[in-house]
Image (cartoon, rainbow, N blue to C red; front, side, top):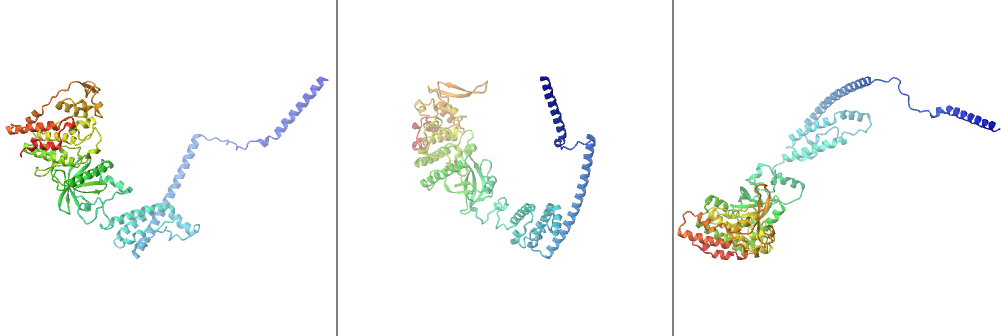
Length: 562
C-alpha cells in the first residue's frame, strides 16, 4: 500500500510540472523583449568612414551655395539701401532725416504677416554687416553737417526694433558723442594734454580733491610712481597765478620749483609735497611751523626762509616760499671742496645759522634736520637762511626715535633713545660748521652703531649716566657698558659682534681744522683755536653739558670782527 501511495503522488507531481511548463511556454510571447533586431548586414569601419566623408562633402556644398546666395542678396541690398539713403540726403540735408529701415518708426507691420516676414528675412542674413556699414556712412554725413546743426546731434540715432541691434546702436551713439565733444570750441572743453594749457589764459585752475573714479585714474598723469608731481616747465597753477620755470630740487618730502608770480611779477619757490597721506600731514605741520616763524619774525631778520602762502594743486599741497639761489652743500663743493670756505664767510654763515636756531628756541621749535642741504644762500652769497621744516616739532612733543635727523648729523641722544630738545640742533649745527671749515663730513658712520664709534673716536667713552637713560642702549652696549661694535667677518662675510672694553680717542680736532687752512697767519691760527673750542663745546656727548645757542652766539669765534 505504501509503495502504491508513493507512486500515485509522484505521478501526480510529474503531471503538475508538465502542465506548468506548458502554460509557461504558452505565455512566453507576453514577456518577449521589444528591442529592435540587429541589422543583419554589418558594415565595416572603412565603409562607415566613406559614408561620413560623403555626407561632409554634401554639407559643404550646401553651405557654399547658401553663402553665395546670401552674398548676392547682401550686395544687392546694400546697393539699394545706399542709393535710397543718398537720394534722401540730397533731398533733405537735415540730420533728423537720417533713419534706418530697421527702426521702430518704419517697422509697423505685424509679426507673422507676409510683408513683415519678407522684410525680416532680408535683414536677418546681413544684419550686423549692414548696420556697421550704414553707421559708417551716417558718421561721415554727421561730421560734414556738424558745423551747420550741432544742437541736433543727440537725436541722430533712432532706436532699433530688435535686441540684437541695441548694442551696436549704443556703441555708435557713444562714438558720435565723443566726436561731437572733440569738435566743440576750446572755450567749453579743456584738454589736459593740449599744448594750449602751457600758455597763460583767463581760465580758472581751481583744483578740488574729489574721490571720483575718473580723477583717481588721472592721478598717474600728474604723479610719478612715488607720488611726486610731474614737473612741466610752463605749467600754470593756482588760478593762473604761478608759472613753473624750473625744477630746483627733489627731497624725501617734496619737489621744489622756481615759479613766476603773475600778481607781483616776482619769482618764488614752490614746494610741491608728494601725493601721500603721511607727506600731506607732514606738509600741514610744516605750514603751521612756518606761520609761527612769520609771526615771531615778520620782517624775516633771523635767517629762516620766508613763507608766503599755501594751496592745493591736483591733490598736492603746495607751499609758496621766498626764492634763494643755492644750498650750502653746493656752496661748499664749489668754493671749498677740499679746504673749506674762507674764514670770513665761515664766521658770517655760522653766526646767521645760530641766529635762526635762537629764533626756533624762542618759539619752542626743534628743527631736527639741520644739514647743508637744508640751508640756502642768496645769489650774492652773503645771506644764509634755514629751510625745510618738514621734520620740525614742538619741543614738548618730541619722542625717542633712532632715525631722526640725517645720519651724519645725528646727535648721540637720538641714537641711544634719550628724550631730545634744542640741543640736537646744536650738535647738527656743529657738524655743519665743521663741514664748512674743512669741506669734509665730520662723522661718516655707515649705521647708528658705527656713528657711536665715530663719536667715541673724537670724544672718548660715553658716560655711564647717559647710557642708563638710553631706551636703545642694549643694542650697542652690554651690561658692563662696554661698547659692542658690529662687524663683518673677513672669511664668512657674516655680521659678528665684538666687545670693546677700552675706548681711546684717535682724532685731534685742532689738527684737522688747521690742516685745511693753507699757511695760516697768527690771527688765523687764533681763529682756528676759537673755532676748535666752540666745536668741542657744541659736541659734548651729554646734551645737558652742551653749549646753548645763546652761549654759542657769545663765543669769541662768533663775536670775531668781520
